[in-house]
Length: 136
Image (cartoon, rainbow, N blue to C red):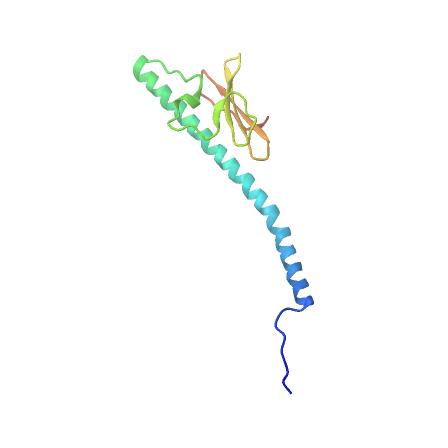
């Protein structure tokens, strides 16, 4: 008499694997969300640093040309490469950047993240200073 052996997994083994995968997913998903958020913040910091640098380079060029230090009215215009999504004075899509003039000698730099949260920074024309990130 020949005994046959069945190949495959038992129901208990499959349930254990599903439980382990569920636990891993419960741990990984929140961490992935935090990683995405921190990467967007790092990307914003890089763009703001590039804007500060572009404004300072422009100001130094003005000192050499006119002996007067002045800053650009829109720092995006002085960047070698503008960030992807820049172009309007309003942000209404994920990843967009905008610059909006204000009447009191300042402008607003605005960015919309992938979770539809908008952040803004103030830009002072007279000093070239860019303020801190604020939820918009």
